[in-house]
Image (tube, rainbow, N blue to C red; front, side, top):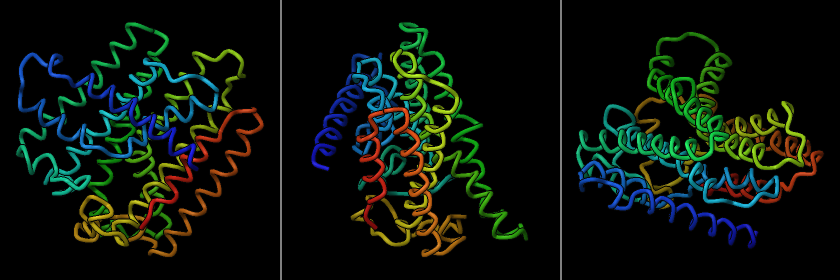
Length: 313
């Protein structure tokens, strides 16, 4: 895994440099507090999993990481970080710690945190438009990112999440029905931007690699991978909220139980949630076997998946 770690670090440097470039002072007509707010959250570190996923998929097709691709990838990261700013607000998840630092609204106040998140979202779309103007072939990618970030993706899942506690208290349906609700919720909320990242890498490769038979089955395999990865990633998050600690996690723990939230742990218990996560990664292994039939270079994508699997409790 040493080569993986080196490559991952190189990817992080590309991402951080592009984010610094986009948020440099010269790009803001005034040093607004909202600009300081968005930079506080955006440049506070993190694993940058979504943009790295973009690179990992492109690597499957043996394509180089171009400046245009980095630009597309960090747009997804900006959208992700806007969602974190808003998620942490008292009206949403009401959290005071993120990546080991006080959350945005704890530093800048609720109003400025809302504006910082709004500004970050709009900055992402400004950059998506800039990319599409320079290369109209990327319009399909920009549209998919927008779709997965919107009401039929992440925001739809966030809406279901806010209603989740009420669903537990008022719905007399079976555990199977509640699990179906929860899976749909997380396929949208967490899965939306993971799907956006994977399919950005796929469609960018489709535009730039003429040696592969890009077809509906191949696209489905990558989308299925993204859906299963998103669910497994969220199950691990739910487990970490119960089993980890603030120093390790860099954010508050135990808040799901505090807020009576519908999670895989609250619904299934710790052991069954672990079993479900394991089952999803086994299914991902089956997808990798199918991808091998296309002679793709899946090594980095597999290593990234293993890295995400092994996030310590």
